[in-house]
Amino acid sequence: MTGLDELDRDPARPATARPGTADPVKALLHRHRELCERAVDPLEIAAGLEAHGVTDRTAARFRHRDVFSLAEELYARIPRDHDTPSPAAPAAPEARVGWIARTLLPGVLGVASVTALRLTHGQTRLCAVAAGVLAVALAARAVLRRGPLGAARPPAPGAATWTCWLIGYAVLGDGLLHTAITGGPDGPPTGAADGDWPLTVAPALALTLACAPGAWSAGLFTARARRRLATSRGLEDFTASVRPLLFGVLTLFLCALAVLLSLCATALDEPFIPLEALSLGALLFLARLLALHGFTHAPKVILVATALAQAAALATVFAARLPGCGALAVPVESLVATWGPTAVPTLTCGAAALTLLIHATRTLPRASAHARPQAPLQGDPT
Image (cartoon, rainbow, N blue to C red; front, side, top):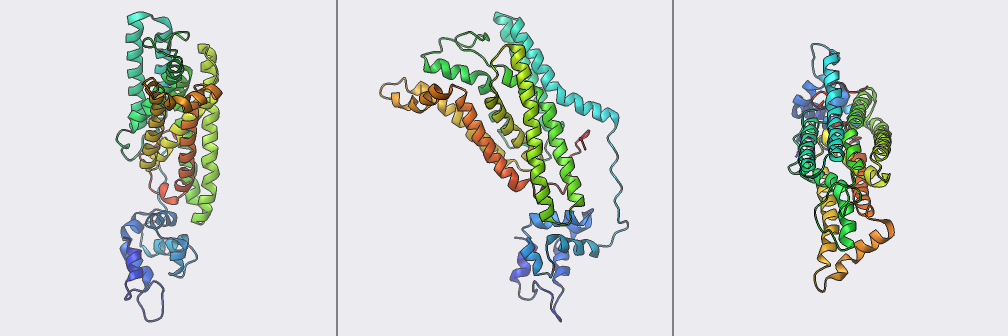
């Protein structure tokens, strides 16, 4: 319960200033003094009040038109030694080089892994691919935990596991689903495009290369949102300006991913199937963008639900081979017969990405999502 709720409930402390009564703004300042003292501008106080459930309607009880106006009074009542904070020092060239190197590392290792897959055979191929997958996973972990896409809060437990499943399905799932419907597979994947269990490498390679534009797009969103937070004259004004920014950076990332996917499909001589990769890319980008701003629960729930839906589609096809269970595979077989095996990941990831996008349009435009800086994103585009 917030201090403001206590003000509303305590008849000895009315929520509006009247002659002969206590100053409710002073009481509110007392309850949020720590927030007001560490704030560098009124909007930071407004964001904190918003996070505690204070709305413009509540601010009207304090004879203010909105939360921002109330925050301005709170900010003015706190004595300060200096009014203007010193500007943050620009990132050193070495830090920018390191930022760029970390974003490119997963893609470089992904290219090396795919090259090893295409140039090796037999047991050597298995060892090379295993080493490459491990190297890419470690590089991605470094980027997501301590690199440019690292969140201030620890990631939700298990989120990385489900992300790996979704990427793994992009490589193995379509071929396995098609083979299972036709009665296979007769053995493990061989890595050959024309094998019994074909792999689709281009989407996964494009996603590793997309770490760089993804980090740049996320940094652009963070930098521009904080700049608008500093220049907005109210929370509604800020919210209205952030939503188009969110759609813009998402579109920018998807355009970059589409270009990378086209190049990878051409280089690897694989079919260019953009919808599956773009829906997965949008899902992962939105999940990471939400995590960067402290919203980790919803992305994990959506990632888990998406992975389970894909696993269920595969499981029903194999379960249909049991006596009397043939009807289980009818929905998946009908979907594959109409749209192809890529329809399963496209629909599941697309629905999940749309759900996260709706959630992001409600949470990321809040000033409280941008008020307190996270660990510095060195090299962020501005």
